[in-house]
Image 1 (tube, rainbow, N blue to C red):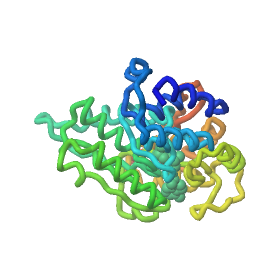
Image 2: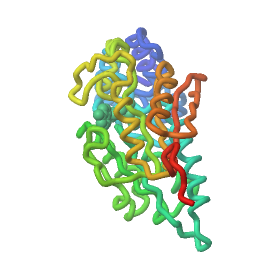
Image 3: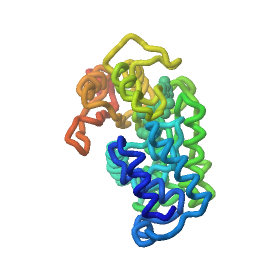
Length: 324
Ligand SMILES: C[S@@+](CC[C@H](N)C(=O)[O-])C[C@H]1O[C@@H](n2cnc3c(N)ncnc32)[C@H](O)[C@@H]1O
């Protein structure tokens, strides 16, 4: 089979996919090692027997609904290539906004904390809660180092936390692959398996970044019917830590526990940035206020839907008076 024939074959087999041509092209790139341009230029190139077999197997997997990212084991996020498998949610473009918001806030933090000699009064402590593949925290560190020129000794210390051991393994693998630019990086990273902050009792953070599960129960079950194989615990905001239905139907069972725990774990002046669903962002903002956060704000996603909620922990609890 040559490349052109393979394209036709893939397109026909994947005619029920919402994107048969793109799926076929990405699978072909993965199997042949060609980039998009080479795929166009080498239409007559004959695939090896091994490539043909791998291609056919991948197409059949895609036909079951398995996302292309799980087939190739890769997903681009914030310009970086993350390893993914069905233990983790596939990073979504909307979550890049969370990274951008974090980088903007960190820019202000560095501005406030810098000494005249370039050293910092305080190294930022960040928690990527519900880290999954680690796409949020790793992108923040990589962008700070590579795009903003922050030296390794001034980079934030990052704690990655997730309830899933298998997800944490993926996160560690991505950290090893993507944060390999300095031998001192690993000492700035922690990977902790934890039900929310349960196993992080002694830490206090300047920033908590989180994309928790927030999809309502019935919608999560509906979404999973297409064979996407993403973990229920990564999507469903209404299940308990054991994966059992909690009885709520608004996607907020976990967030109701998470918001006050974040407030407790933040240092005074610390910032929480949380991704939510367009259907529960406003209620989440209310939960932020109820927990004591101030300057609570909502940010829309790329489609103009309410998506991220931010809030700052005040230096003094609301209503308390300073001394004299
Ligand atoms: C929506 S995914 C987000 C993954 C990644 N941060 C991203 O943005 O692509 C939510 C993650 O929360 C984790 N999770 C679910 N319940 C949790 C809990 N009670 N404590 C900690 N992590 C939890 C899941 O294992 C999953 O990896």
